Length: 87
Picture 1 (cartoon, rainbow, N blue to C red):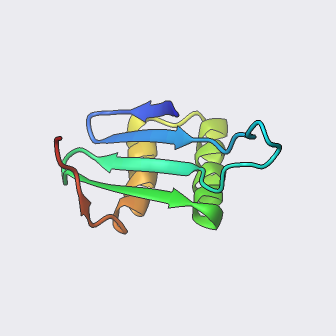
Picture 2 (picture 1 turned 135 degrees about the vertical axis):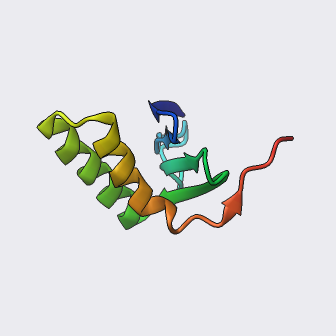
């Protein structure tokens, strides 16, 4: 688990697929995106996570502002319906 982005609006945490000692790999890896203002979160994996990663890399290559990154992340949070709750 690695914190990859934190702004006033969003937090993005990457969960990487890592090999196990028996030679197999974990089946889940992806990104958790928390919308701080809407208080919702989403976990994306598979093709959607790959699309997210490629989009972020393309932004990084352009030297984005925080607003650019937040706007890109905001396109994914429209899928989010899971409320964030404190335990």
